[in-house]
Every structure is written in structure tokens, then in C-alpha cells.
Image (cartoon, rainbow over all chains, first blue to last red; front, side, top):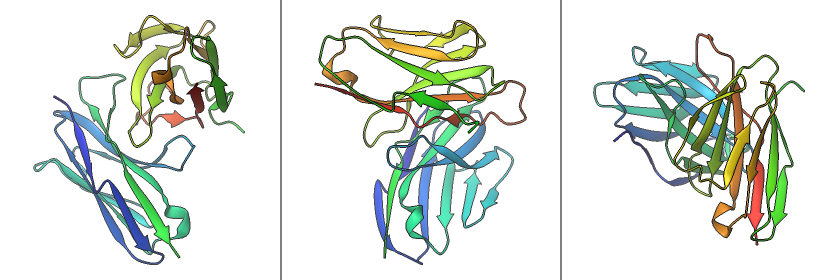
Length: 113
Length: 115
């Protein structure tokens, strides 16, 4: 069964600190893996996208990694800011689907001043 | 603003009433998706349109739910005889076909509360 699991479920860190969020998936084969940021009460916004052949992608202070062998991805946030407080969702696109995305439940990140 | 828009942003209704939500996708995006999201969970796929054709429906979309995209532009999602379990955020997303990536662009969502 295609699944995406994320850890931790929630995380609280101090402003300025770094953090790493984890994503494990069982989707195979897949065409790409995304990380979305979702502010409370808003729709998700794409942060990074990696195909199965890529192993790292950066977007400002966000760096995503992908290990297709172990089926793991991580999202590293550097020098966190209060505006980083949000849910971060890992999403995998199965190779054989035109529409279906497999969504993780997300990690809720809270940045404290 | 040329992003995906959804109306209303919030809807409170009594159990048993019908509700209708609207989604206006990004102009020229011919693919449109509806999702449902409950607190602490990722979005769950409901249905997908390519132009005006509804190509796929999740089994989550019971017969009380119906979605339309009559002219291939905006879409509506109707829920009949609402139940308390329908309370959720309903998200709409769009994307162009033939794009090099299949990133979906999401609207702000409609939060439904069924009393």
C-alpha cells in the first residue's frame, strides 16, 4: 500500500535554530517527491520538488534531501524564523498516476522567540 | 490576484442542510482537484477534472457529494444533507497539463463546520 509517514508529529524550536523533518515512504515507483508548507487555515504551498534521480534541492533556507534506496526524505530548515511556524507536508507522486498524490500527515513546526 | 480562489472561506451550517463551494482556478489551468483536509492530517483526494470532464472520483466522495466544472473553468462542490463528519477544510487546486512538473497550486480552502 502506498503510504507516506512523517516524523516528528510536532516540533518546537527556538528562533534561529536549525531543524530537520523526516519523511519515509513506501510509494514505488514514484515520479517525484515534494515538500509543502501549510500555514494554519491556508492551502499548502510547494517548497521543493525532487525527481527520483535527484538527491538534494534547496529553496532559500529550506534544503530537501532524498534517498531513493532507503525511501527517505528530509527537510532541513536553517536559521529558523517565526514565519516558519507551519505544517510541513511530504507528498509523493506515484509513477503510474495522473492525478493521485500520496500525502503525509505533516509535521507541525512551532518557532518560539 | 491570479492565484486559485475559493468561496466562501468559511461556512457554518446545520446538519441536514445542503452547501455549495466554489473554486476559481488559475486562468488556463485545465486540471482541477478537490481535496478534504481534517485537523492534523494531510489533504485527502476527492475528485479531479481535466477541462470539464470529471476523470476520477475517490471512494470518499459519497453520493451526497457532487462536483461540477461545466465550462472547464470554475468548479463547484456540493454536499447534500450535511453530516457532522463532513466538517473539514475543503481545498481546491489547479495545474496546467503538459507542464514539466505536476505541481498543484492550492487555494486558501473553505472551512466547513456542520453543527
